[in-house]
Length: 88
Image: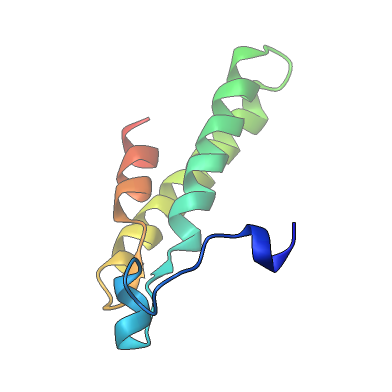
């Protein structure tokens, strides 16, 4: 793709974060909690790896709680991902 084929952007019109100069950072703990819960669920469904699934679920719970606490900080997003992981 060349620069001439991309549509021209107005300065700061579509992205409100570019006007303020700051962007919200997503909570990595919330996303990791969801990943660990899915991996734990898949592991529990196989009888041989059930004990690994329990360990992954415990790690997911801890990361979900950490993700919720991190989402309370200003400038950090990802609260909905952490809640989704804890509800799984």
